[in-house]
Image (tube, rainbow, N blue to C red):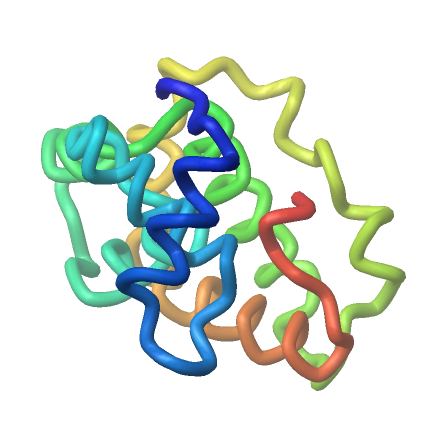
Length: 142
């Protein structure tokens, strides 16, 4: 993804952003306009899988292809964090402790893992969103 010249972003932000929109949201939108193949963040990836679930391994590969490797890795990590906290209302540990939890997994395994967790994938992703919100943890930190 191309980096954005901040002066351009700030000017664009002030010109087009609706009231209440964070600057980072506008920067994400600008990056997406420049490289529409790459979707924005782990929240978009989770939403795609929540709405597509259940998926075949090929469908998982197709959805994953829209995201950078970092976002794919955050998605896998988020799924495991959701599974670990399935019976909780908040994250069991501080959110930062979960960062990098999927770093040992090869990217070429991601679609297979998502397919294998198919019957529980939606539940895991919804649970991680619930727990991270109540723990005030931004999943982009995974």
